Image (cartoon, rainbow, N blue to C red; front, side, top):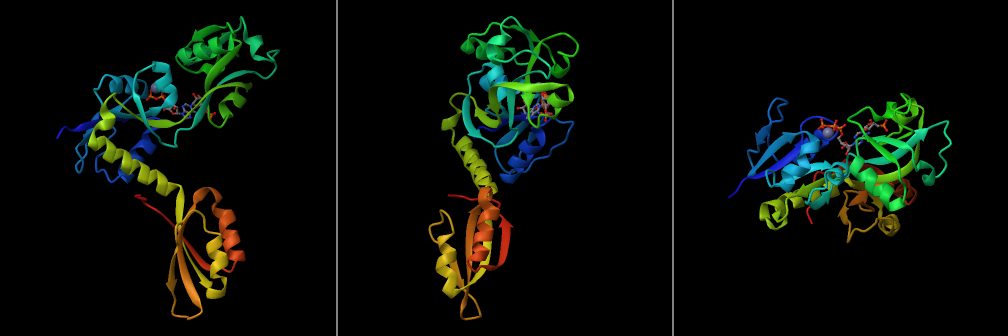
Length: 283
Ligand code: PRT
Ligand code: ZN
């Protein structure tokens, strides 16, 4: 059986979460900072540790079958790869930002202005779609200081908390794209059964992250009211307790409305609520 290769970022913002995701999929491998390639001992897979900018092309060219990288890098490198799964981490937005004290009010005001960026391809497409003609200045880093140095009138850069823009006297002006880490594959790999197996493992880990396992006790009189509050579960398990009037209910609750749900359950008579993380949900 052919050993698959997956490329992940060697160091940087996506490295830790990528390693954690693969380990949560039950893959055993060493994560030495010095090695460029690490074999997985319990799955026919090798992990390549690369700079994120190189990952899309490695996958496009089939040197790696799979890769984990930000959508921003994929769009910028204009590669032909398959998007296999959004991964929910590394979230950020590519934005145009302008100095706080500035007369740029609308997108049209960017006509003839200089915009510094490390994302010229994405920015050019965006401006073309908007019918704006700006002077795109491609630089390799520290984009946020370029208006202060007089190198540009605006910038186009990734933003997550907004702290970098703020501390450089800039404000977000227009959203160009939003991005998160995604699993990509070379053309043709989606039919490979090992790739399918890996995607299923990843999905089971992602699903589990979105939900909590909850066990609670309730008097039988209040059981219907409690069950009515439990979302999307076919039938929660109801287990008898030593005390005849009471039962234990086992269920899963989505993380996103977790606290609302818990307080509603308490009001409906739930007691002794135990909440546990879930490792995997296999459908
Ligand atoms: O060495 P290598 O080339 O592999 O890494 P890199 O330095 O090019 O990338 P890295 O590790 O910084 O980012 C990897 C990926 O993380 C990016 O391609 C994005 O998909 C994603 N990501 C998520 C971010 C951010 N959030 C982010 N905030 N990448 C960069 N930033 C930078 C941004 O450029 C700006 O300088 O953080 C600053 C803004 O952050 P806030 O929080 O102040 O808004
Ligand atoms: Zn990079």
